[in-house]
Image (cartoon, rainbow, N blue to C red):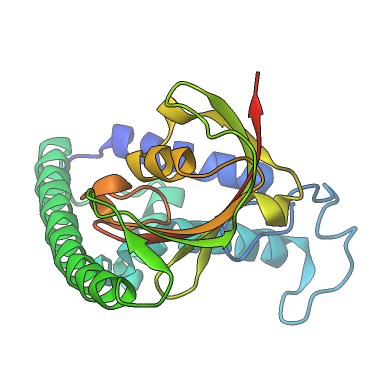
Length: 254
């Protein structure tokens, strides 16, 4: 059997950064050290139930970090075999796999995972598109909701008396963006500071909607995916998801 030193070195390189940050508290949502975390060692941090001494504490924290990184593929790995590989690598034992075999296996695994992600994306895209179509069809019948030729829907909450921005203007707005289920994905209101941007730099639904609004207005906008982030989505916005915005146009910035 070939002792694949390169595999062992790669495994060590993956663990070392974890060891360097392991002394910081972990953000359970991100799997990363908490912002502004103190850099004291576990020994300085006092006793921890279930973890005797610094060695156990450090081992657990590094393992916790590794676990967070592996969560996305947890259904694809065998934990006992993973533990065995770590143990054998630390003991400098021969790994029962050649470099060529490892490369071939990981390449096939990567291709399979990519195909799985594409299939999941396509399924989400179909589901979101159907949900959006049904929602917008019903929403367009509500009193006060108007639908433009492009499919953008809007409702006037407050009608301002100022000028309307043009396609190349820069505007200052306060807004809150939610998904159809009411989940907030972005909000200048929550950040406590209005946003400022050029209209030609935002999605088509915003470009069209803001040009309908006189300064001082507050509108509710329903943006179909075709006028938003389309089939790919962006960050917390999934493929073909319709979006809801409550927007207050404060000023046209000269």
